Length: 226
Image (cartoon, rainbow, N blue to C red; front, side, top):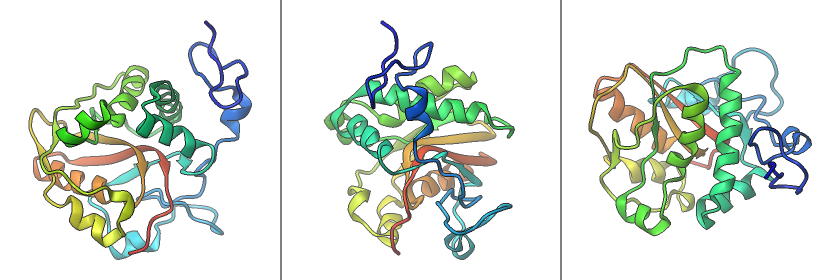
């Protein structure tokens, strides 16, 4: 069967992207963003810009690449993928991010590390959304991914209901690294909000010997208040 657009039902894009070109072009692009954490910025143009949050408290990761904003209709696809298990949407989201990553001129990492779920959350959900996103990205960029290198060793509260300060304390000490490390790693997730989880994983990876940690995500939400 030919690909079919998940948003409007029209014909998708060959060979396998279930999203038509007009709908893909209408997705909320994260065009002006912080060069460190990819937070959307408004009213600013030109050059590399670092947001006030990163100037006050620099994240542990070195940079973030997040090509879209967490806004309609992309947010609907992410929620359906993450909370209703519509894995077809995950393939679309992973392919979109892979296309954007393939167009970058930056050096590529040696390894992709999906943000892990705690085993109890994994059993509840039935899959890890970051791992599902990693599959098409790994194939497209020819970069291996390791879903077992980083483990969530402590169950944490759902970050969506917490402010920025609470998010940082919520994930502190929640991750451990086991396995062979690479010098340059990309940590992958679906949505980047405050960057607390990503920063904590980057801290653990760097403590274990990784030199460069960048964050990849499909969408960037507006950072929550501290």
